[in-house]
Amino acid sequence: MKKYDYLIVGSGLFGSIFAYEANKKGKKCLVIDKRAHVAGNIYTENIDGINVHKYGAHIFHTSNKEVWKYINQFAEFNRYTNSPVARYKDELYNMPFNMNTFNKLWGVFTPEEAKQKIEQEKQEANITEPKNLEEQAISLVGKTIYEKLVKGYTEKQWGKRATELPSFIIKRLPVRFIYDNNYFNDIYQGIPIGGYTKIIEKMLDGIEVKLNYDFFDHKEELEEIADKIIFTGPIDKYYHYQYGELEYRSLRFETEELEKESYQGNAVVNYTEYEIPYTRIIEHKHFEYGPSLGKIPEGQAVNKTIITKEYPDQWVQGKEPYYTMNDEKNTALYAKYKELADKDKKVIFGGRLGQYKYFDMDKVILEALNLVKKEL
Image (cartoon, rainbow, N blue to C red; front, side, top):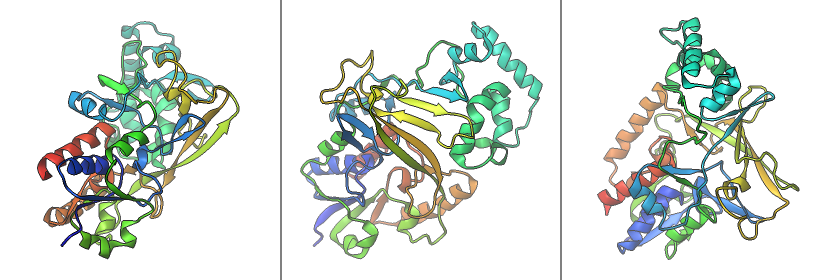
């Protein structure tokens, strides 16, 4: 007799939604996580009343009404609007590229003037068949935007020069000919009041959870205790890297607490020049209060702030895999692992690492709910 209907490996959004829905249907679940906390990469830690995004900024956004309704069962969301600022040397620009950006770059005021300027630069470059990322970006937005706001940031992110990167990485660069600094086009957007961890804790309420418990340290025993496994870790590791390693980019974070009310006046500031080793600085308190968000959350220290510098990092085994490298080589390799998974009656793979695909949070919810429909 198996002890559980489902063993769920990983307590991030995908695994926790499946556990919550399975538990509602009377299924006995065990959730395990190798970390000392639940919530995976959306984990937020409360420090001096500030909810710190421990694994990089997570801003919830979606245009799917059902997904928005679903996640709002577990938390009330504030009205945070993602409006990052890009810093290039001693210049500040609004993101995404919009009329505020173009006015600062060229002194233009109307959409027509901005379009003419971009078109002029594209014609001067005269690139018809882009051979690499640099040529692709210039063929889309011209040289000025590319050199100040794309080149350095992208090279840091991928750990390679733009001329060495394939053109397909940038299929398009969003350009808006309106004065609007809202980064996302989605209808619904916000940050959960009280942080993301509380969402996952609500989902896992009443479900057995083991933390600091690595699946691979207990693999033989764990494979025997449940009818099925929902696995949200790396698919190649599950199959002992038998076809080789899938590649990722990793991140490294440096977090510090400062004795001041505000450090940069915005939640996210991107650093687009190559010479500065981090890609952005996150100031966590600005996710939770500002003119549109209302009063300072209860318990938040007024004269303290917490910032995190985010450094792209080469991935090797043992480091956290953040971004999948969905180039031709890795896509072909993943297809081999997926073929194994499709024949496997015991395990179901889900999430960013299990499906080897970068998902926004709303897409993770959709994937998890699709599995719920199919499996339960």
